[in-house]
Image (cartoon, rainbow, N blue to C red; front, side):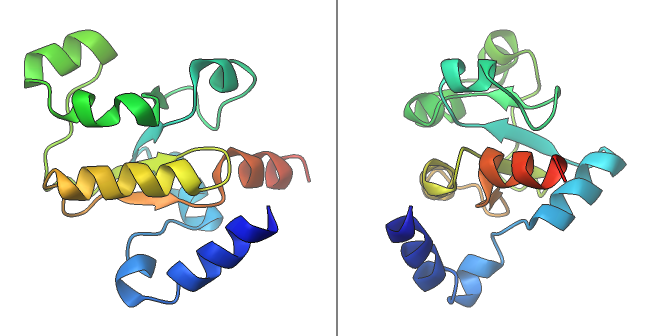
Length: 132
């Protein structure tokens, strides 16, 4: 866990990285306003133990590249939601502690998604702050 925190601290110093980050407070506001499409990139087994939001869409990080490469109709059929457009600004990825959501962010960016973001605190931060 310490290694992940140190890595995140190093990565987050870059201004381009911080532009791609959603804080806990921002996530709460975005969820309350209904102005977010939250993608949970954890495994289905992890999601079954708890979710940030009932509206979060589970696409494991290992499947994300193929999911975002699907035709629009196929994506909608498989995941039950419209496929994000590459220029959408309401797409946020999260996982448990930020490692897989960073991978998801990198994957989406490589596929041409220019405004996607991630919540690096992940479900663990969400759960700890919601229980207070």
